[in-house]
Image (cartoon, rainbow, N blue to C red):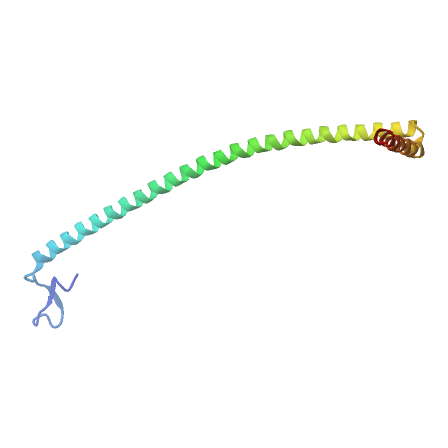
Amino acid sequence: MSNKTMARTSKGGGKYQQVPISGDSDDSDNDDDFIQRQIKDQRQQLQKQDEGLEMLSLSATRLGELSMNISTELDAQNKMLNDMENDLSDATDNLDYVTRKTKELIQKSGGKKNFCIILGLIGVIVVLFFLIVYT
């Protein structure tokens, strides 16, 4: 029991007995006010928590939408990269083919020695042409 509702009496030999104190009705009103304030505070805290959870929910929704947009963009860029890789592979194959055919042509025409002779003769023809035209 609380000290507010207990008083020490001289007859009891040092023992406590319940003796009504004059302010008990005020204490019960104060207790009721305290309980009401606590209930009100708890409701306000719950409302704040609900608002915080609502904001968190909206943020999570936005993050989900953003991640879906990023995923879509990555899928599109992966497709473009795959297409570019295929095009590059085709271009590499074509270049290898042209290089192989050029080597075959040089070998059929007598190798590098004959190729150099042909280039030299073309150079002489160009020089003679300029001499004829400009003289």
